[in-house]
Length: 44
Image (cartoon, rainbow, N blue to C red; front, side):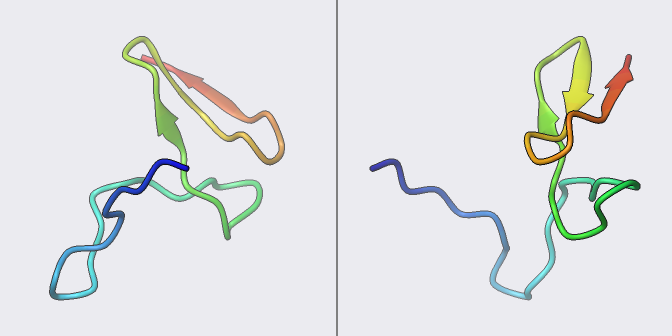
């Protein structure tokens, strides 16, 4: 199981939340941001 820090010590994150779901973060794939929950994609 992978472990990573999503939130900083002050409780903030630099990840964008999905505008469609609202409770999921967008994964950064370099050329796009993608929501694994609903499939929403923003091309960069």
